[in-house]
Structure formats: C-alpha cells, structure tokens
Length: 561
Image 1 (spheres, helix red, strand yellow):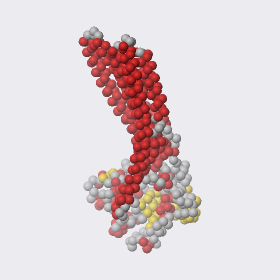
Image 2 (cartoon, rainbow, N blue to C red):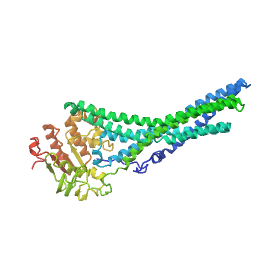
Image 3 (cartoon, helix red, strand yellow):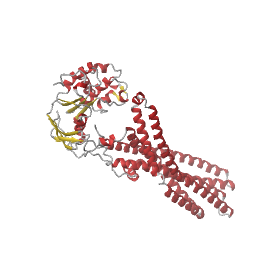
Image 4 (cartoon, rainbow, N blue to C red):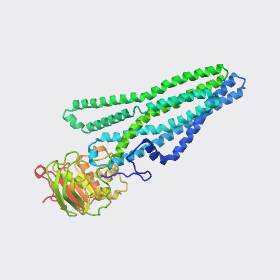
C-alpha cells in the first residue's frame, strides 16, 4: 500500500479549510493567468459601457440633424465594439474555466493523497461510492463555482460599478435612484444567501449515500441475483432515492429564495427607473437618446445582478462542499507517521513481542490476538495454519502497519514498526492474496503498478521465472495487452499469476502469501510452487493457509514439515 505525495509547488494541506483558504492555496500558482483574465474582463467591461453611449448618439443624431456619414460611422463603431466585447468575454470565460479546473484537480489530488494516508478503520467505515462522491462530487460543486465565479461575479461587479459611475456622471437623480436600488438588492441578497447552505450539505450527504449504495449493490450483483434479493434491493433503493429527493427539493427551494428576492426587487427597480426617465424627458432634463441610454443601462444592470445572484446560489453549493472537504481534511490517521527509520535491504526478521489487538469497532474484551509472541530469523519460511477468524490475516495487517497493536510491539529487523518510515515499510513488505486487484490498463501497468521506471527487461525476467513466457506470447499485444477493470478478461489463475509477478517486481524483503493458490488448478499450482522456490530465495516468506483438513490434497514440499 502506497500513498501519494503532495507536489512541493503547493504548501501542505490544512485541516482548517475555508473557501478563502482554497482560493489562496490553489489559485495563487496561476496568478499569471488570473491577471490575463482580469485584463480581458476589464477591457470587455469598458466596451460594454460604451455601447449605450453609442446608441444615445445614434438616436439623438437620427432625431436631430446629424449627417448620414456620422450615423453610419456610429453604427459601424457599435458593431465593432459589440463583436470585440463578445470575443473578450468568450476568451475570459475559457481562461476562467481552465484556471478553475486546474485548481480543483490539484485539490482532488490532495484529497486523494490525504485519504490514502488515513487508517483502515476510516476506510472500512465508508463505501467506495461514498469516497468517490466525497473526493470528486464535493469538489465538482466547487469546480463549477470557480470556473465561472471570476467571470460572472468579478466581471459583473466591474460592470455594475461602471454603470453606476456612468449614470452619476450623466444625471445625479438617476444615479442616486439606481444606486439605492443596488444597495437594497445587496442587503437582501446578503441576508438570504446563506439560507440554503445547511440544506445543501444534507443534499450532498444524501447523494454520497446513494452512490455508496449503488456501488455496493453493483459489486454484489451476482450474489443478489443468485439469492433472490432483487426485490429487497429495489425497496432499499427506493428508500435511499426518497431521501435524496426530499433533501434535494428542500435545498433547491431554499436556494431559490435568493433568486426570487432578486427578481422581485428588479421589477420594482425597473418601474421606478422607467417612471423617472419619462418624468425627466417630459421636463426637458433628458433627451430621448439619453433616456434610452438610461433604460439600456438598466437592462445591462439586470445581467450582472442576475449573475451575482446565480453565483450566490452556487456559492451555497460550494460552501456546503467546502465544509465537507474541510471535515475530510481535518480527519487524521490513528497511525502516527513520525517514524523515520529505513528498513535494511535483504530478508527481514519478524518479531512479535506479547502482541494483543482488537479492532477499533469492537470492545477490548473481544481480542483478535492475545499475547502473541514469536520471532522469525531473516529468510525463515513459515506457514500459519488456522480456522477462519483465528487472526491469521489480522497478524499480517499488523506487519503492513495497517493497524497498530493494542498492546505489545511488532518489529521488523529489530525496528519497531511505529519507528519505521511508513512508506518505506510498506515498500519492503509484499502481499499476495486470494483477492487480486487488477486495474483497467495494460498488462505492463498492472505488473508495475503504473511505474514507468520498471524496465521491460526486468518484467520479462520475472515472467520467465514464473513460467509465464508462453502465456505472454499468446497475447496479441504482449505487455501492451489491455486488462479490463477487475481482470474480467483473465482467468482466475492468470490474475493470480500477475499478482505474484508484480510483488516480485517490487523486490520486498518480507512476503506474505495469504492463501495465494486457492484460485489455481493443481497443475498451475505445482508449476508456480517450483518457480517460488527460486524467487523466494533471499526473502522472508510467511504463508497463510486454512487447517489441514480443509486444504486441497496438493501441497508442495516447499511448505511441508
């Protein structure tokens, strides 16, 4: 088991996560692109403010005595300005989307690395579907927000300020009326924007449970069908979907309060502005072109307010996602990672010193291991026999330091597992189990765990030792053969052989074989045992098996006695 490392270009992730800290942490490395986007938005805003001015000149000129050449020039200028505005807005939107996705992909990477570093108790308490929703679903809500926030909110705010300044310069009364309207609108929005955050958080949690439910049922589809549990599963699915429906509807209705409040105020503001314009034209204080310009500015004012309002709704979704991201980041592993000792090369010795252990979800009176003590010299070959539930697999989990002992100590080559560098320890301990995990990718990637530094010559040498050369030659694309997710296009024996090969590629000093031949036919098992005699030389192997009366009759001399 390995964990990803956070790139050094970003500071370590913090458990106290807020929207402001995320913006600072993940957008700061892209400040150059952010500056270019700000320039484009500023230029586009200036051009947008120019459009109503051109319309006023055209209308007043057409109603007056302006020559046709001047009107044509104004019309052409209007077309050019409108085109440039659209182009700049499109480019700014593209840059904003690129910045937003880049930033949140880095956040996904940090979340994945953080969760991979958490202990097994954390992962056992959560389904795979729930973790996908926590790492990807919550961040996606933030991605949607960041991708358009700068364009719609920052650009909208620039346009809003520009319109008010232009109106104040044109007519103080109109400027004062619309400024009061904007202030009132902002006060209402500031009071209503947080209404949907708690409900949106419940909505995200309901979706996480839905994905977890679906993932579990798809994984056990054959068992559900074989045991006639389809009706019960659909009933449970209906219960989960009912919760998703109610939480989603409630969150949507509360978020709609923001939009409805804004729309109602805008209708009032439009009525006041149009009435004021008619009055001022009648008094001779405004020309028809100026009145149209004011009305055009009012229509333009609607766009940034609506955009800001929509983004405040997205902000509620992002706020709920950030809260859940913060909760995940604040979780710490029960296994301290302060060990620094590197385990030596070569075969490792193993020592259990009065080890007792119980799982975190059970009480101390239900010990899985109770006072276990033994020592294996480097290179010693040992088999562990025992019935199901006797603690064989638990013992190996302590070797990998997936858990720490409740009492006692586990030592590898004289080093307490707690004092060893965790990543280095897991790199020196290999595991071959009966549950083989294969990924969608090439055979080479599955053998090397996507490590391109492993040479083809090294891979071919291991496959040759395992007697898999003939099998590889039968594959159309050799090491480039595509493996389906879960190894669906391989037999159980082929998948098990791949698991053996990739463990030996890692060259560990201690190898745990957890019933590795349970999926192999007798002929393949005998061939594999002969290869293992050579491959396990210079390592400390521990083999786990069921009691003798439950094992198959085939057992190699390598493990007998």
